[in-house]
Image (tube, rainbow, N blue to C red; front, side, top):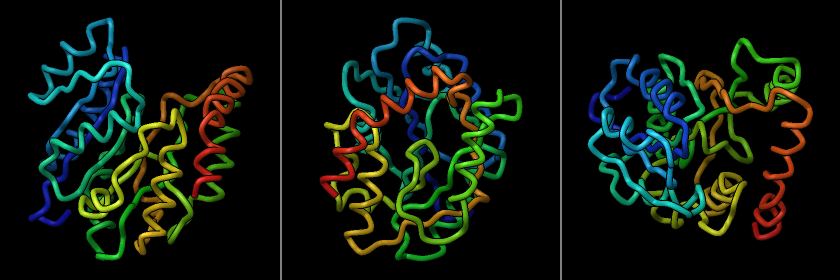
Length: 224
């Protein structure tokens, strides 16, 4: 990671204290410097108090969409690179350095990231879905990137207005399309590894997750 770049990591969360701790500790294992902003969506458990132990910047934003949560974090961010992940993710040790290195390598890159991975102990449903993700997880320009494993150039993010706040899901698809329409590259690099503990582990969970994703997915595709 370039020495002059100190990124801002933004993590939205809702009632997931254990996952939040796991995510933050994984990022800190890299030894790299970064600013951390946690945005809470109205947790009713110990999530907020635990978040405050790990960072001085905890925003409490109940009842808003996840895109709006990420935007609120970005408003306070000091970094020139915005790094988005979620509380149910577990980044690899080289995740932060690798992502910053990729996006800093070319001024034309607006977004960088890769498809997330299923954790090693996943059940067959998650492992099967992960095989599908690996098909599109190849180095180079890509149509869209997932917000849970996303590095954004701050000036580009601000220029296009950040995430749409009216979408319940697929706000990352919409953001990627708008970045490309603005003339910037959206780049996938499989070396940016992040494990998603929120992957559905049963067929029912998978159907529920895809139904939720589709609730806004069609709007993102149609409008872009």
